[in-house]
Length: 310
Image: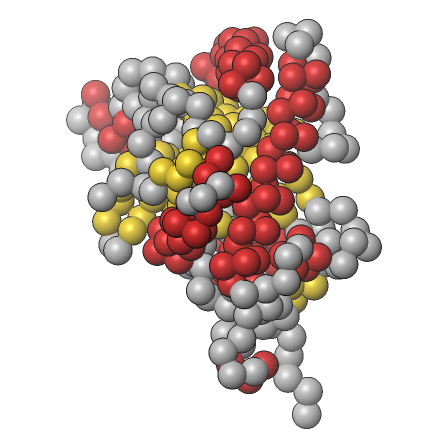
C-alpha cells in the first residue's frame, strides 16, 4: 500500500468527481494523502528548499552539542563499557524552529523571510481549498470548516510553520527522529524532503512509508478535523525514523483554529445526541495536548469535556 497521490489540478476539470472521491478516501481511510499539481509555483518550492537548507547549515554546529546528541553519545559510551542501555523515548533527533505571524524569524540567509512569507501565503490558500473540498465531501456548506476555525470570522486562524531537519544519526536504533503522535490542529500541509525518507503513517496497524515525491505537498488531518467530522475523518498517527545517511528536510504548515474558537462536531448522524465528541475551546485542548502529545488522543478529548450540570 502507498499513501494516495492526488492530482489537485483535476479538481476544476472533467475529473472533478473522481478527484473529490480520492480526497474523501485519503481523509477517511488514511488521514494522509499527497497533492501534485497543487498550484504552488515550483520555482518558489525550489527557493524554499534552498533557504531552509541554508538556515540549517547556520544552526548545524548548535545541533551537534544539543541534548539529543549528548544523550546519544552517553548511551553509546555506556554500551562500550558493557552496560545495558535503553533507547531514548523522551526526546527526538531533530532540529526545529517555528514561524508564525507574531514571532521572530531568521534574518540569515537574507532571502529567508521574503521566501517563507510568500510560501506561507500560498500554503494558506491551498489549505483553504483543501478544507472546502472536505466541506463538500462531508455534506457541509462551503466554508463551514473555516468558519469553525475562526468563530465565524471573529478571530484569525492560527497558521504556523515548523521548519525541521533530521540530521544523519549514527545509532538510529537508540533514538527516534520524531515520536509517534497525531497532530492537534486542523489541516497540515507538509513539504517533505524528496530524497531522504523516514516519515511513516500508521494504517490498519502497520507503519507505512509516506514516500518522498518531488514537489508534492503531503496533507494530513489533525484532531480538530476529526472532531468537526464527528469521527468520519480520523487524525492519523505518524512518526519520523532517524536515518544513518542524509539530512532530512521537513517543512510542515498547520492551519489550526484560533485559540478562542469553539470546536464541536459539524456532522451528526441522527442529531446532537449522536455526537461522538464534546464541544471545547481549542486553546483548552492545546493546553492538554502540550502535556500529552505522544499519548493516546481519546483521553485528551475527554479532558476538555465540559462537566455535566445537575
